[in-house]
Amino acid sequence: MHRHAAMIAALMLQTLAAPAWCQSSAYPAKVVRMVNPVAPGGNQDVVARAYAEQFSKLFGQQFVVENRPGFSAVVGTRFVKSSPADGYTLLTISNTFARTPALVKDAGYDPLKDFTAISMTSDTALVFSINPALPVRTVKEFIALAKRRPGEISCASSGRGSTGHVAAEMFSRRAGVKLLHVQYKGAAPAVVDLVGGHVMMRFDQVTTSLPHIRSAKLRALAVTTRKRSALMPDVPTLDEAALPGFQDSTFNGLMAPAGTPRAIVERLHAAVTKAAGVAELRKRHHDIGVELVGSNSPDEFAGFLRNHIGEFGILAREAGLMAN
Image (tube, rainbow, N blue to C red; front, side, top):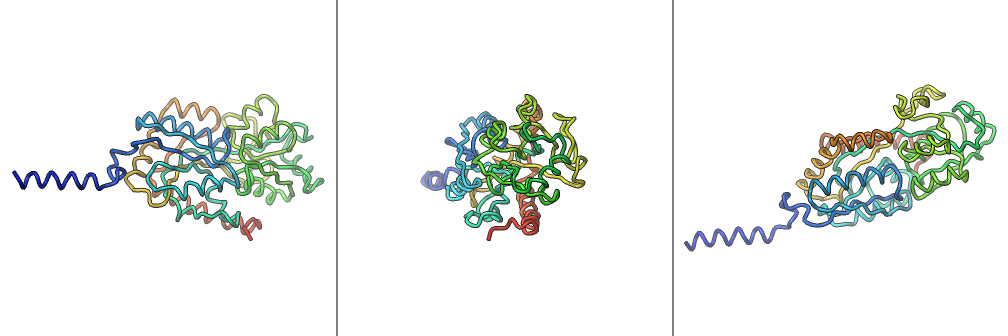
């Protein structure tokens, strides 16, 4: 009896001594914050909120999206980097996350060393759109106008290193034109000013631009993927319109601070896979140009990020975009 009681006591002590997150079945035991380091309203925000809604259902615990925009998404990214590695503060990312350290001298984070990869969450084509006041209707006409007015045509982006900024730099370099870069804190305010005529062009996710294109408040000249968008079949690709071989897209994903327990990372990865497979959710996002995807594993997503960072580093050096 004494020996049996001693064994029970020892097991109870071990359970009490172990942090709650060591028991994967106990996670999450409280609200989980998904920090979105850009302004509300853009593609990254839309995707993050969709997954948060599904996670809340799957886990029976609330997942909330918290926007912390600023400085090319650096503000929110640094916040998550310095948060406890317990699975209760996560980071939603896009291409900007992987690119900013090469573009911004004081980014203050290493995308591979300071974070743990969970999964890709979506992949989306970009659309090259202009304010209709600009007197062009094709990419070739735009290029000709930009060559006549070097540095005068304003191009909106969500910040240095954002997907729109990099796509514009890729375009400028391939087309041999110079644009005037205007930075915003997120996709939504950039689109508002584009519609209002305060800036003249933008490379943006289909998600945020499509409603304005359909209402003729914006004019779509091309998409950045090799295949035309099913949502805009009459809009050519840049590859066919003027720049053979041009290809670009934006991905979203989910990260956690470095050191987050593997059991929690695996649970979150499994949740992404389940959420991305929900038919109604997939259709809802397909209808706005977003493909929901989940990586095969956290390690696969980490490898994808590593390759993306390496490839972009080469482009940034060749285009003179590297931080001094």
